[in-house]
Amino acid sequence: AQKITQTQPGMFVQEKEAVTLDCTYDTSDPSYGLFWYKQPSSGEMIFLIYQGSYDQQNATEGRYSLNFQKARKSANLVISASQLGDSAMYFCAMREGMTGGFKTIFGAGTRLFVKA
Amino acid sequence: GAVVSQHPSRVICKSGTSVKIECRSLDFQATTMFWYRQFPKQSLMLMATSNEGSKATYEQGVEKDKFLINHASLTLSTLTVTSAHPEDSSFYICSARVGGDRGSHYGYTFGSGTRLTVV
Image (cartoon, rainbow over all chains, first blue to last red; front, top):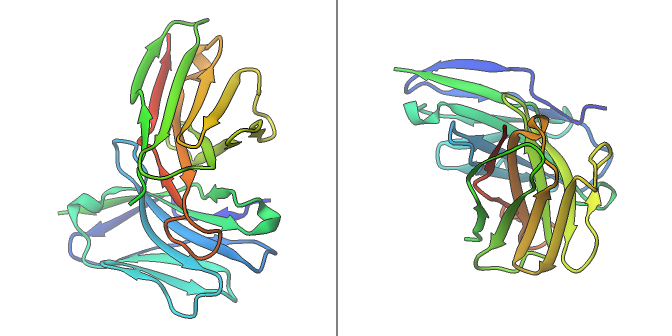
């Protein structure tokens, strides 16, 4: 069963505007973590932001914020004031707790194109 | 922060030969490392989990005899693609678990990846 779903294979955003990348997940483990990674064309994986299942507040890291809606099992990434350098592949990932063996599974990714 | 160094970044090999990819944790001890494979325009697929001093745990469908993983020390894990064939051409990324099991956003750090081309 698909555990991480990213429904947007590609997204376009105008430079300086905000964009939301969608991510939904499925788990029965009460303890889990949600991550967003950026993968530029060079292939490296860059950690962006983390949200723990018990965290009360939505995570923020600079221009990145995570819209965590636990009841809906969604963890959307919001990038404010998009920059040309934000053009990349973005992956949502989930790490389950004990029952998941602490492995991280990834969504299919969303390719973001920032237009000048 | 925790850094994982992965080498080589790019390798081209002939069909039938073996290729070794190294993943080193530079400033921390990595008891657990993960090896991923990524096909073009696709997500990362977990291949195996490597624990220091014990046998790796392979995901379903991954040939353990073809993808040999060795995690002999707390700072080094290697993936050897044996008798490589063109269909093994892919991008391989290692990842190390860092810190505690709960709530740390430094839970995983990635190597820079290895692009393998088998000709």
